[in-house]
Length: 585
Ligand SMILES: O=C(O)CCC(=O)C(=O)O
Image (tube, rainbow, N blue to C red; front, side, top):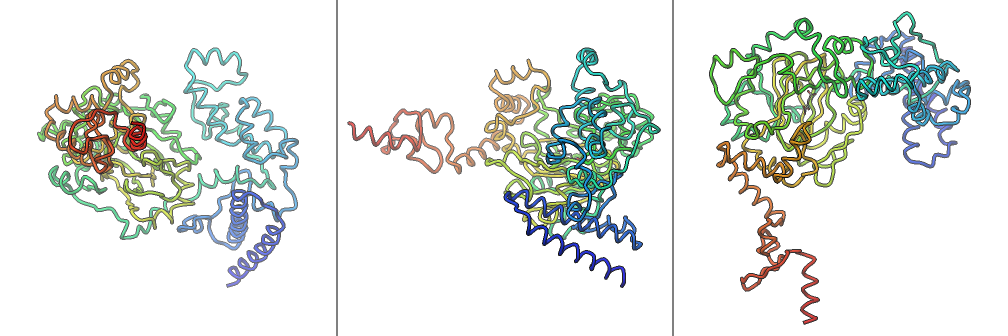
């Protein structure tokens, strides 16, 4: 009893104090007000957590919280959330000279202009700047820009200007700063910056350490994804192509599923370089990074050339021979046949990826490119998925463009879960699942999804075009040309050729015909015409001839008596002009 009473009394005192202080503050800007409120809340939680620890509760008890996962993890430099400044008698930011006058976020932005050596020097001037100059994002940007984006030749030139270039080849040393500076652990310092209160420094650390797995628990029955053992291609195409689901059987039969262990991958591929976001790292370096990093959004290995690099053979699921199946490393699940993007042959955009990442890594909200569907097979680990149907608008914490084709998710996965998970879970259409080792999840065309690795994980994924969604892909290629991606890959000449020849839409249509998919194509074109009609869209022919399509029959200048009248079909606007002309005549 005593600890609980103490805790609540202390919290009440602090709350009163906070309320008085907040009343005194003149906060003009709504956002700032919101941030201060959050900080005050953080400060209270911090205080409560310290008390709880003093009273014997373990940190794990608190971190394994539910939806309100606000438990506090102690920062190694003892930086605390900004809210704590309201009750503090001292704030060491005051000793940071001119920097003391700037908001924390602005200090970090200014520091982005500094080089490694300048950051090291400025960070030696006082404890507050020590903490600011160690923000890991600054060092990650420095390192990645230097090592990855700049070519070897440029690097040589740059070394002449930079006084402290990072060493290459490098070893991952536990943080971006240590790695950039090649600092062995005996030269790394951890100075206590007690009395520094900063959300900008504290929150990224908090989000990198607070437990996220709790968000994957207690999935409400109404949100649960269907789990099936397997499906036939007919069943998939007739009944399931527009629904997310998990298959529990096919992946377990892949030879690769039984062969791939972390040790084996390391033994066979430690020297092989894989793409992880903006960098290409040897597998062994990525493995060291995976096991020892504190990033809020860990670097995610996402490589589309893995099959060539690892010498894998991928079975052809359009032929169902057992010997082919057994001699291949894996064969895409048979139910996802036919995959109509195969018609594109060498013009097909990158479509299969090896995905490796530590717990807490994953994919922020997006829909897959070009209107494609996808399957995602978990070889090791497990993944938490949240999905929304393409018809959803106004999803919590996300912005979708007016034509529903682009989604803006400026938040990290941790930020999203901490702030929006409860609202997302309640939102109509939301569905969720944990896809376990040996299972494969289907993401239908256009579905928005976010994925969190609950453990260190290995997965394989592939984008494909089933019959049922051919119309979506054709529409995407025709109507969202500026968003079409992956065609021509890195080959600029190839890309130019495709565009010269009428663009991706015409290319796909002609390839479908050439490869014997005319039946599927005609069905999809008919559906597209129906959709166009519903939207009141006119085909090129209708525009040129003035023959109307859709609901606005008389808009296009069609002669009401049925005769031909040539015009450019500037539908609605023309009405007025026509009237004017009539009057003039
Ligand atoms: O992180 C993952 O495994 C999901 C990948 C994904 O969403 C995608 O490839 O579109």
